[in-house]
Length: 306
Ligand code: URA
Image (cartoon, rainbow, N blue to C red):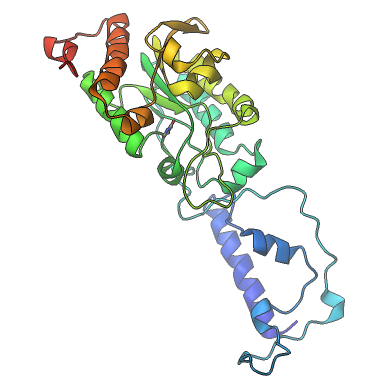
């Protein structure tokens, strides 16, 4: 093995150990790197000598690879979870507090399990962060959405993109803040979109079924007085039925004994800016405020009325 190659190897090992000591459990590995690792050790591709005379030859002499150090091809059993160490905020210590003894510890343990989840290997490989949930674990009101989008995946927090900003406005319009409620999704990882640089897709039934126990445990621990299910995926995921969001919205349902209000997803309101649609969502929220015996001003009652 050449000195240069050995130095590179040592530096890589040192770097990985440094990351490990800082609590990073996964590193980004590009699919082509994985494929290269599965091959017997050979000269790095940029050192490969072209047969064509017209191609510029590399200035560095390729390291001599001794046959004795060639490793047998490694088998890749399953996709390796890929998380960019730079953007991975899952290790950040977040303070979870509760007025009830043991609740914060149980919630923290649940969060840690979810952050380490690799039950959907394809999502574990594509995600930047597990988007567990945010807010007050003693909240009376909980919002449940579909799945993280690109912004949420990046920041590790649900509803921080455009739809999230609208949800924040809806919450503020009730007189509450994001810190007063709890916000989570059916799926904790961003649904991957292989081969696409942008766009989202809804979670598959398998992904939903795999992930829903985390949300169930969150709800069981929080015990909100009401849940707002945002959009068809959230409603179907929680109620296990597909009656259609248009039929269900505005009508109280029950999830494990907790009143559940289905309403449109804020992303729908971004696509359809009609005042009438905004009013429908607001009427659903007014019903929730009534259920929670929150004060409602005349001004609030009249939002989005012509
Ligand atoms: N849409 C969702 O359903 N959830 C998010 O967290 C963001 C957008």
